[in-house]
Image 1 (cartoon, helix red, strand yellow):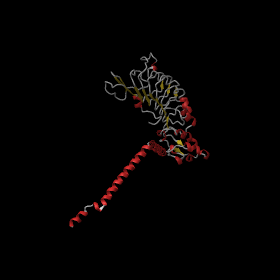
Image 2 (cartoon, one colour):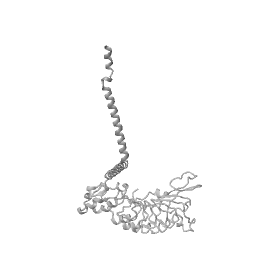
Image 3 (cartoon, one colour):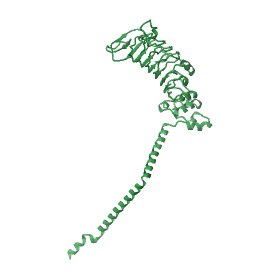
Image 4 (tube, helix red, strand yellow):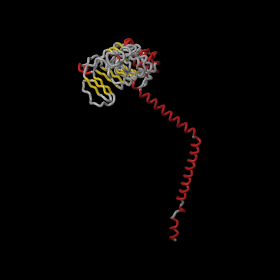
Length: 369
């Protein structure tokens, strides 16, 4: 679905919620509706979902809400906090909930402690929304949150706007994976706005043309998370691509292989990892340094590795020969003696067979006399 395209009225009215728990005892829900499945009951009701559900079973593990209209998520939105206590059932946490998917829900703002009451939450998907305001403590209480998906969800285009949007919201988390694909970002988020324990940053399908050296240095100082940059219009000139080439020296093949140049026209479609300084128009006085840091093609690296392996095998073989030189010399002497004995025996038999006095022809002559 294209970004910003409004959902159909049927989808919004449906507010489809699938709660994956134990196998329910009743039959499947009829769409459009949302279902709560527990070991004893299966509820299915029609209606427009304009606010978070308040009657989620306490044993729920996975909750998915798609196509609703939830512009603002207030404190403890999924633990009944928005009810205000006396307006409905007593607010209660969901201690077993580990997966929360909120896609295509027109979410624009996350208030303080929006996900309070979800202490076990490990994966949160807010993709395909329109986030314009995220409170610094929006994810407070989510100590076990490891994966956060914000694909096509942010109303920010540059590092400054993204920093303002996520200011303080992520730094206190223990995120291992952050997905920012499809947000038309022109810059990577500053390292200071990212969780210190981040190990995977997905920035694919954005508008990144060049990468700032300070941003990459900040990521390197935080343990070099895996950085995915495929489907970005990278500009392949010396000034723009130099920091990325330095980063890719220690990157995995999965990070390097999908990267292609979008400009200039002469290099359009060329793999970034195969470029050389001479192709980027780098000044002559910097060519030597760039050649030392340039990425070697995978084929060259494979041949070098194969050569090193063969050299090690040869070295081991020579070492074995050296350590067993006395035994090898004794074996060669024994072999030479055996060959000499064999040849002498063969020579002796040959001489006997060639002697006419030892043949059978002499006996016939004496018989004629």
